[in-house]
Image 1: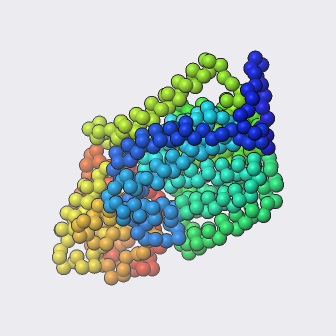
Image 2: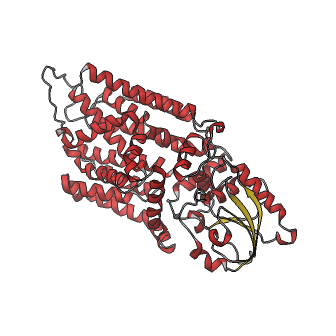
Image 3: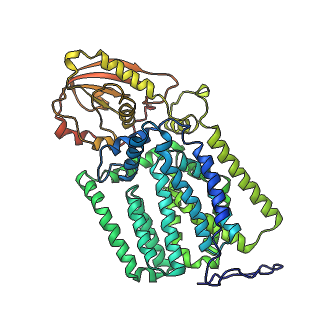
Length: 524
């Protein structure tokens, strides 16, 4: 296909240096420079933050291989466990997949821009724009499901966009295979495909749905999803319950639905201006008409974040396409010197923010203030990083030492929060602690304790009858972990109790005791 081109008044069209039915050459050198510079910058931040609670959970989950987990697919836990096996205790090794995914997303920005007819300058702008967003800093900084999901979503978009231009059917199969891989990370990709199919039905090209390769890919995706679907069905579909939990956490973090626009600005940074141009171009620019099937899913993401209170980073998968649309449109339209200067200033500001965010964070804990709300936990983690694992381990070790020797055989540890369990399991592997369990989040779906466990060290912010949900013959508070400036539920307002003779059969009662909500420790 050819791209409609127009000439602005007062401008002379330049002859194309490529065939009319082919996109411009890929800006290999410029994109490589942007990607390499971003890689050097982001790599400098890989070891600056302490292990996050979710990262520790991923490592623990990877040591309990399964077709699925309560809150994500198996890919991230397997990567985390592999990194920990290859380089134990290394945050750099653990976070390398997140860094690679971020760099791939930068390249995808340029690749999509090329498909939209953008030349070297436009491709470079799109790649630089993504690298200069706070989202890219977040994506590369720690291992999260978002880090891989955003890139996989962008890759699906690129493959479908390329199919529209080339009509090469293997691209459709490849898009579904990427989706199958993405499903092993996060359960959002079926919603992505539902939006894409709705877009094709509304805007075309409907020919896509008549291709055998499309349905072959859909069949392969379904086959790849069957193990995860089986696991969810056997375990009562916990992933469905996570939606309400995530929404509640996001609203608590952001301060309510009214604050969601500001949250999006915090993800986009100054380069949000190019995203807005990309939205306008996608809806109005004639050259992008063949790709308007992407509009419904972008709108659905925005509405889900703005009105539904979902995570703001859910929209990041749309960034490469929107940056590409904006950059290609500006290159085609042409801009005056003032607008060009303004754009360069925004890019420079975005780059400066990214550099400062990577090199200046985390801030020294000497500037800490008490963390009393869930929203403060989020900001504390961003600015100061997670902390308190050593205090948690020391407190549990102290409590374990207070247990009479006669009661230690068969003793187990149960934590109220899955972060606590993951932290104790990771940092306590060099000391002799009892087996560690938790009813919280994905930990609750690991194998339960043996029924022979009649003595429990319970770690939590709530008393055992509330936090554990089990009545015990005797409950004794052994150790208090409560630093005023500590991290809630890690080394602030945490107590270790000795619970004797819990009136429960772990093997049968465990499923009814599970909880998905995050126990953050600020409610006290």
